[in-house]
Image (tube, rainbow, N blue to C red; front, side, top):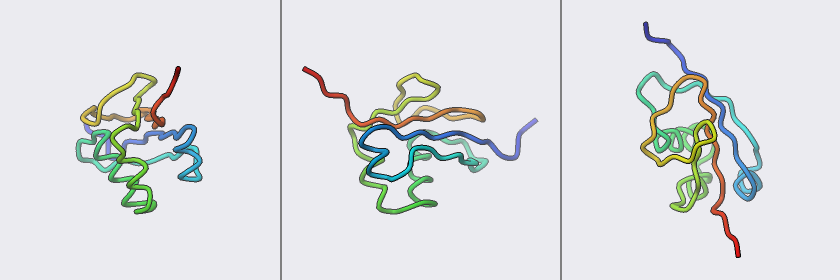
Amino acid sequence: MRQNKAMVTVLFFARIREQLGIDRLSLILPQEPMTVSRLKQHIVDIHNPDWSDILMADNVIKAVNQEVVDDNHSLKEGDEIAFFPPVTGG
């Protein structure tokens, strides 16, 4: 049985949170299969085109349910997706 709407939580941390001016979103995903890459584009499309450079940057770290993933990772109902700036250390 297929659910009509999948709800996910999107979290933004550190510099990304500051740049976007928001720390979290609750989103209903389109019915089509959704990946992290497609989610980023969906967020830009529905919220602010200026967010594209921030979310689409190659060095942004993505995590789903507290596990680092790549842009091709598939999303499902209830997932928590987080975006982090690159980590620097020394």
